[in-house]
Amino acid sequence: MGGIFQAIEVSSRGLTVQRMKMNVVADNIANAETTETAEGGPYKRHRVLVKEIKEPGTFDSFLQQARTPLARTNENHIPGKQLTIRDQVPISDAQPKEVVDPASSAKLVYDPGNPNADEQGYVKMPDVEIINEMVDMMIASRAYEANTTAIASAKKMAGDALDIGK
Image (cartoon, rainbow, N blue to C red):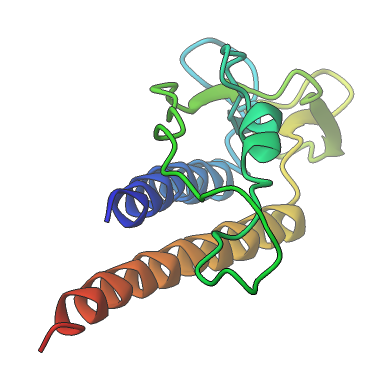
């Protein structure tokens, strides 16, 4: 049962990341026309960064451990070693973080009637592309849905495992 609970924990962390991505995309869309911020200048696009933490038990080492032959249950079967239950794969406590996109800049738009226009009539607008933001939102939404499906499947497997003895 430990593997099922770990699968739920991994998927729940995925839900957290995807929810944060959707919130950041919503902020970017809401501020796509913001020419003045508290820091000064136009709004800068934000992104969510998720990093792997390099720990002694990396994914590759656990992948190598997973290559265990099947247990021999009958003497006529091909000899192999017994399948053992390994330690749980460590799940990092790293949290995703929202950062200002370093590639984000301002685009100049000619709008002489805007109060934020310079002497030539150009306004510095945020470099937020609505279409790109909508694509990012769809990707995050589908990843969120995939994580909820994985949690539902793990819960169903746990329930089915409890019903085996009945």
